[in-house]
Image 1 (tube, rainbow, N blue to C red):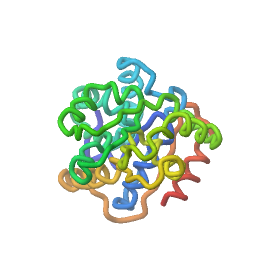
Image 2 (image 1 turned 90 degrees about the vertical axis):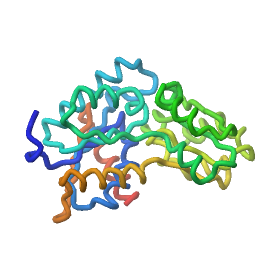
Image 3 (image 1 turned 120 degrees about the horizontal axis):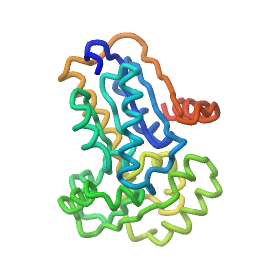
Image 4 (image 1 turned 60 degrees about the vertical axis):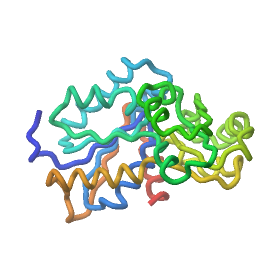
Length: 255
């Protein structure tokens, strides 16, 4: 493994481009850093894969990011975080990993009394990590919705398919919930579409808190870069040019 003082990038990975919702929050408070974003579109979605498959996929990505001189790696995929974060931290003990997780604790802290819908992949909802979180902060007014296939539809960008999916799967929660936990990093990309179905609900997303935590860790370890203009490098596991163009287009819109 390369020495820490040679590492100068922040690595971020997701099963697709959903992690862009995490990256944009990080850039807001860490604009001087250099980033490399890895989109694993070849193996998307992760939510339907076995734990061992997810660990192997994440292991391969981490090896790539370490070889690209990353000083810290952000797991910007809830499924990967819940299934592989502990494995990666144990295997790569010299590397710092920051892992996204569903913002269910925020409901406990800020809107405990309100009925809540947790939207996430099947893999995240069934994971031990999420169920421990739920058990600890359960407001006993929570609906769990495994959104099988939704991240895939968002990745493909078919707005009609997304709208159809939401009508079929979340319309019956209208008037029943006031909070919506976005338990997949793809889902913040369709907040407006969700609002059209559910009305004025409050959204909870773990990305802003992750960004603050990342900054704290970099400061603590003396790895913060506070000068210069940060650069962003994009890598897709299928080397799809259209995926790269879409990534930078969405990032520019979000920022």
